[in-house]
Amino acid sequence: MNTQSFLEKWRPSRLDQVIGQDEIVAILKAYVANPEPTAFILCGSTGCGKGSAASALCNELGADPYWGVQDIPAGKQTAEAVDEMTRTLWQHCPAGSGWKVVIVNECDQMHPKVNARWCDILENIPPKVCIIFTTNKIAEMTKDDEGRRFVDRCHRLDFRSDWAILDSAQPLINRIWAASVNHNHVPRAADLVSSGGFGGQVSFRRIVNALHDRIMRLPASERILPVDPPKPQAQPAAEPEVAMDAPAIPDAPESQPLPCEPLPEVKPEPAPVYVAPTPVWPEWKLQPCWYVTVTDGPRTALVCGPFAEAGQAAARRNRPRKDRAERTVNNAQNLQSH
View 1: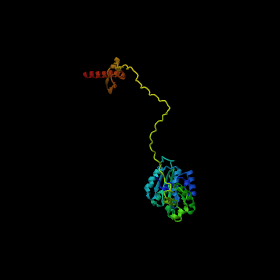
View 2: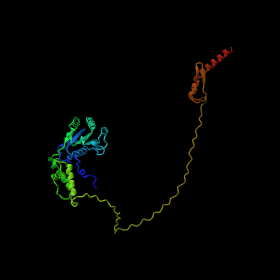
View 3: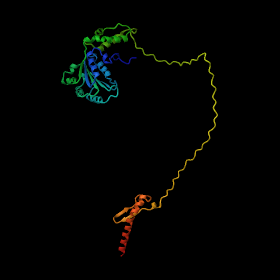
View 4: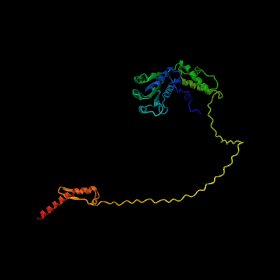
């Protein structure tokens, strides 16, 4: 079962596979050798290879098809969508080579507001970003000043579609015919063009479609049909081979358990009980605190408890103050009694 269409199956994946556009291929190869943030506008008639060249350029730059490539139809663009897309272009691409490619198809159908917004973006393209526009009507885009401003900000590449490039399609026709048909009666490119009515322009898309139609009209016996790979079948397990002349190996006697003595019972020792020693405090540390009242106001001689060494030292320092306060009180009482 084919998961790709016939056109996608034979679409070029590299620039060397793009046919009929040698000059443009040489320009794009030079760009791949030294890439920089650039905007291209690919001009030409339908089927001349614009989309194939854009897809091949993505592969040559190493852009990841899921993280680094954005394919945008021109009819679905709005100014807000362009601004949102531009913000993502300034972000780092976590996959591939880090390059990001934006492909805008049929840019001649963009709204004038979107066209003006793109003109601002093309003045400052984010790093490691390549923007590719495609159009079939470059003449209509350059009629007014707004369209010319847009085209001037892009590197314009004109794809050929004249009859001189028709012979370059023959190698592609030969490869497709050899992979699809089991005989060598390969049609010529001119026969496929005349049967399709191309209107004076060469379209490789129409040539491949005409070739596909001719292949499908052939009998099934002449066509090479894709064959699905056979499904693996489960095979029975092979029995081990035994030599006929090999002596039979006697069965080993059953092993008897060795006698073992029971281990002595070990009683766990009781955990030691920790008894904190009773502290013995010196007598001079058991003195109470002093609270002294003097003439200049109350003062606390001891603030950190009766068992602190600092409290005892403070009490010794404040004893003269207490003596003076007691004498003052006694003198005042004596005066009142007289």
